[in-house]
Amino acid sequence: MNKLKYFILIGLFVTISLKYGSEARGVFTQNTNFIINTYIDLKETIQDSIKEHFSQVDEIRALREKNIKLSESATLLTAYSHRLNDYLKKEDMSEYAPSLELVRALSYANLNDYYKVWIDYQDFNASKLYGLVYNGNSAGIVVEKDGNPLALLMGDPKAIFSVYIGEQNIPGVVFGKKKEVHVRYIPLWMHPQVGDEVITSGLDGIFFKGLRVGVVTNVIEEELSKTAVIKPYVNLEIPAYYYIIKQN
Image (cartoon, rainbow, N blue to C red):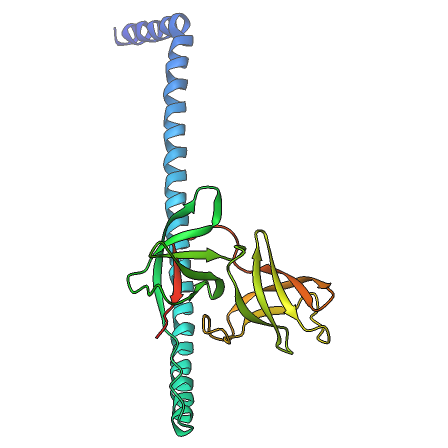
């Protein structure tokens, strides 16, 4: 009797397999694919999370190392500034203490002019000119327009300030020319070279000496002076924040 039941069960299984086998395999395959896809998605999510975690860890580590170097530099600069100001006091000269303040870019002054930007600067004095700094480079100047501070970025024809070229500190004056920037009024007997770095001279009272401006790409010899064409370090993309050089 038990054997009969056993053979009956086997027969039913074979019959069901023959009749519904393809449907059963389809359901099985569908469920299997779902499980595999779910597994792969979960695996990729976990891998992405792990990569993101380690990326953040690496970034935090790099920022910590950078912060240590910056702290060391700040300490050394403080020591240098104290030594310098002690010397200036002995020579009966005023202290040298340039000051920066973070300012926010608000909007373009004109929609078709990307070289003029309104900025938010609460201590603005309309009678003064200010230097604008971004990432340690000269970015332009700040002037008064309708009683408000207007940033004239590198490339604006009125973004004018004095500079030095190369290791010989060849003097000149920056004039914006849209995508190009020119350094004019270079004496004919001086010889700026392609590749020379241009820095602020500090002689105009707008910038302090040593801020990077750009690199010479061409030198034009004119009748009374030379003009150096430079590629500025600050590009035309408008960042949200700058540093302004405060005026005493």
